[in-house]
Image (cartoon, rainbow, N blue to C red; front, side):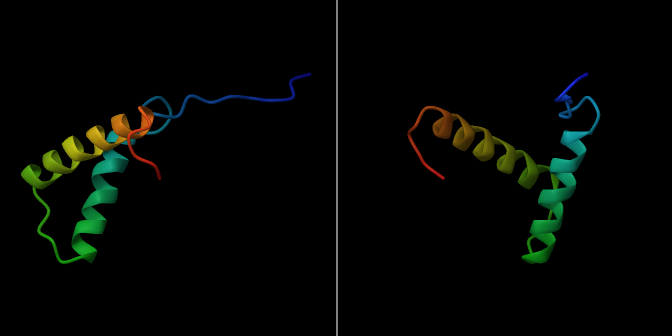
Length: 61
């Protein structure tokens, strides 16, 4: 009998890329910011850099 079942969700069972885009679009719209491809690309670049800094211990939550 199995006690645990693990699922690989990110881009396997769930489309995380679409979810990320839809989520940030909702935030932008709620703040009255125009959502476009340039803004989304800038968000992704900043988000990637901040995750890397978090992993390296340069920033904290």
